[in-house]
Amino acid sequence: MELYERLEELDADKAEMRASRILNGLGFTTAMQQKKLKDFSGGWRMRVALARALFLKPFMLLLDEPTNHLDLDACVWLEEELSQFKRILVLISHSQDFLNGVCTNIIHLHQRKLKYYTGNYDQYIKTREELEENQMKRFNWEQDQIAHMKNYIARFGHGSAKLARQAQSKEKTLQKMVASGLTERVVNDKTLSFYFHPCGKIPPPVIMVQHVSFRYSDNTPHIYKNLEFGIDLDTRVALVGPNGAGKSTLLKLLTGELLPTDGMIRKHSHVKIGRYHQHLTEQLELDLSPLEYMMKCYPEIKEKEEMRKIIGRYGLTGKQQVSPIRNLSDGQKCRVCFAWLAWQNPHMLFLDEPTNHLDIETIDALAEAINEFEGGMMLVSHDFRLIQQVAQEIWVCEKQTITKWTKDILAYKEHLKSKIDKQMHDL
Image (cartoon, rainbow, N blue to C red; front, side, top):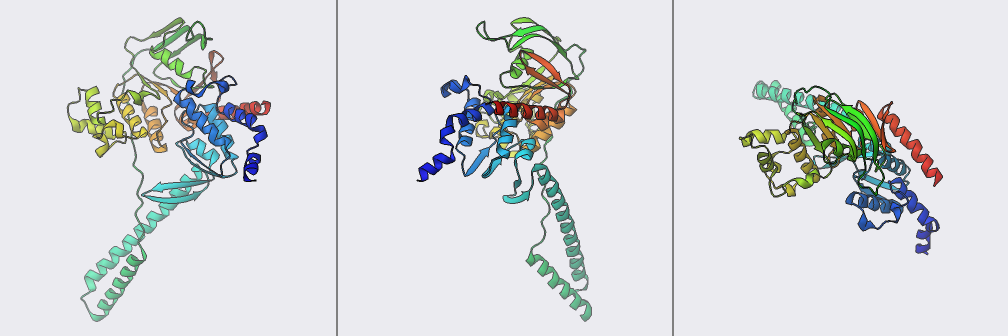
């Protein structure tokens, strides 16, 4: 009987349709849904694992960074899907925008303790700030009272009988305060301060794209046709668009990793480009420590203590700096990459999904560093909040071309929601 109930719960008669709808929402075309799993990259296999978890309709769904490896379209679909999930959902995410759209409660792990907050992430931040402000007021008041009582006891504890009795009374009051538990000082989260060095000025045009078309082979369709644009040191662009539209491909064309099929890309002879991408951590020398790796990459820095300070700015401190890189977490490896990238002293930053494996505080530090950076920046990211923080223009990569989005990224998110709703309705 339980088996039949479970099959009914899963809508077994509509199983294939449900599976197709979920896979479509996560970016799988009809053709991709028929391919074998072994033919997919690791990122796409992660999407299949996520689709499987959603398909099962579990009583409790545990998700650890579910938006990693997703594009903006899939993030919007997943946010809508999870916001309607009727059972227990516990997730870890670095995407503040995603948390706001999905969560009704926040659990904060701090100092080995769990604290529960009602509301989404923005409400959690507001409530936490208010509680910590009140906690510090209480802490300061208690410390003032303790200092006053200790001073009184020290001055009058051996005075006249009346003063001595008052001193004893204050001593008992002090003991009761301590016994009942004193308010703890608020311990703030560690703050990070990413930094990209001044790159110096070079006259425009820095990079010119002239009548560029590209496809990977003669047997595949064009990704782009007849692109024409320029970028300079004041460029602050976020590239958006559906998966497979060519966002990462464009960055590879601009760096010279790929060559145009037709047309030309002209670069200033002195321009230095720093590119961050999802596979950069795979190029680290895992047997070296972050300190050894950076000293090897930048031999002009002779003093270890100077290099320790540089690495420390990116949240790697103490033993983390001298442990083999293979023992670091994914997030810590990403920070090594950012330290390495910053010291290349680039004029242009090309950032392809830089927020994967970073926490919210680190993403904020990255955003601040980008905004203070003197050079140009092009960004591919599934993090709406980071795009909102750093991008002055939004370019949509779609249908073999690039068009400028005239509104902000939140309007683009609403556009994606409408588009996804229509697609789901048409299925």
